[in-house]
Image 1 (cartoon, rainbow, N blue to C red):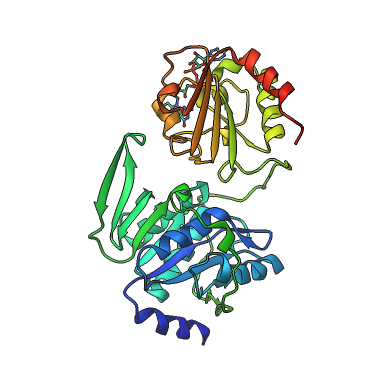
Image 2 (cartoon, rainbow, N blue to C red):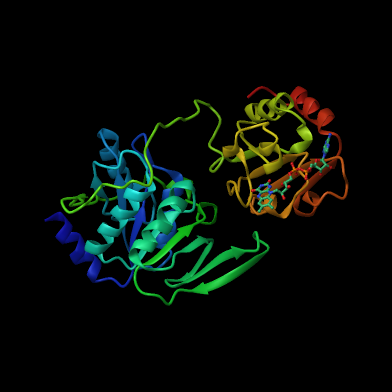
Length: 341
Ligand code: FAD
């Protein structure tokens, strides 16, 4: 019954978007809220449905949060399903396919993070459409801007394929105005996805376990401040200086691929073309040369500070503040002079 009401609302509008939403602890995760912001910018008159999956009470709390997670969403239609506790890409892609068949959405959007990048290409293949990835700008409902050549050029692409137009968006390009979040809106209708015809079987992947780090540090993708170390740190032991500095500033820790490959830190801290894309208010790079693949992941940061002992290091070309110096002198001095958090 509820599903039929939603479909009725959708057919009146030219743009109806299904946002693939991740949630944690009863709230919609920030990258998915950015995906809602992107969905909103497709058209003033767009209707937005969030596809949420999981189990337990937190799923229902997240469904309530879905309606108020973005200030411009006056009504969201979270579709709920209690299956899909574990984020395996294959069944999720099938779920998106199933929901699209009944919902007839014009657009499907997910954040360009590891979850979205895993699910969206598979879902697009099932739907027989070409996805447009890493969108950073939306000019109108079928025209998008996306970076190419490791962020050195921007291309404008127009989607001329069949519905749905399937996108991943860079969450750093669709920020959510902080103070308006959680503003009161009407409770959205909640509909359950009918999974009676859903075949959950797949043999491509298997859930084994989930680990998350218990850290007070902010998440790298959403942090206001990021402190990054490069190969110049020389060892995992020395890299702890970066972590101490991050703790003092309430910042997230980032690393270059060279630092990750050398085993100083795990690869989920890598910033860059093949790592995370970040755009914090302050990005501090210590002993980072500024290779284009690294810049691709941080050049949109508001203020960039670089410390490098080579005055010709390319990082200085994107830095707002540069210090030519030895990080083994600069970081201890900063640690000494900065007040405790
Ligand atoms: P280096 O290039 O070795 O630079 C070290 C810097 O530290 C130098 O500038 C040096 O002057 C400075 N230095 C040395 N000692 C000190 C000191 N005591 N004090 C201060 N400064 C000092 N890289 C990424 O980071 N992210 C990616 O996502 C990524 N993706 C890639 C994808 C592809 C397909 C390829 C080919 C490469 C990718 N890379 C990526 C690797 C990238 O090209 C660089 O090799 C890497 O970013 C270099 O890391 P680095 O700056 O730590 O090391």
